[in-house]
Length: 308
Image (cartoon, rainbow, N blue to C red; front, side, top):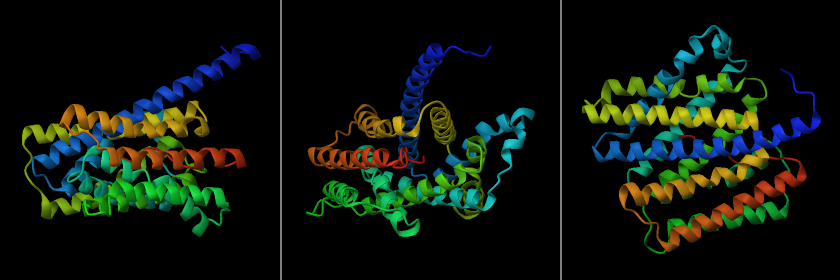
């Protein structure tokens, strides 16, 4: 039934916005859950390449039945296949770097460094897309990187694995830019179908040389890793279909809250004051960039949850 009452439609829009926020919270929860399973796997001495293989393969397997339905079959065909393949390849590299860093760092530290991604997007947009960036946004980017430096602690407590997370953050930024490009021509479900394809292919070749026989429990963690990552992507797509990106952008930072809680509850790792302060600065800088882009008409371009 079509609702023709404007007042009722306004109420629906508000409910849709609220549901989008809840879906975003669910997506960030699943992304952090993926990282918890990664920690379980590296604790069993499984190599990072095999972990990434499991994340990609089980993501694809979990959602393949959806695209076998006649209703969705056509959506598996991309309009921009080269960009979809490039996006998938960047995701594979980003995941590999992030998972490698995560094997040495706490969830909160790795996630906090990863969230330099929205700041890097501003720089890349300026360099490669010719977007104008005013002095206030440059100041926010500088402040955000100061927060990253605080987390990385160049005073002597630096861990080399932090560079892996920082590299993943650069990959995350590239991933966002290409996601913007494909969103103009491809259905979100098409993008979800192609998200793990390159990583699955590359990782499967690597498995010919790096395969370790998983225990039954490790198989379970691998499956959970892929399913939660895919579920996070799926909820993210639905969230953006129901609510504006400008409304959802601030809630992507709840991933840092989930990461801190998971670190405490599952691993007994309490984030120290330095990490909390640095993460707070990164979040404030990212939120300012989001608010500024919304003000000048670039709503919602500043970020999204980590591409688990």
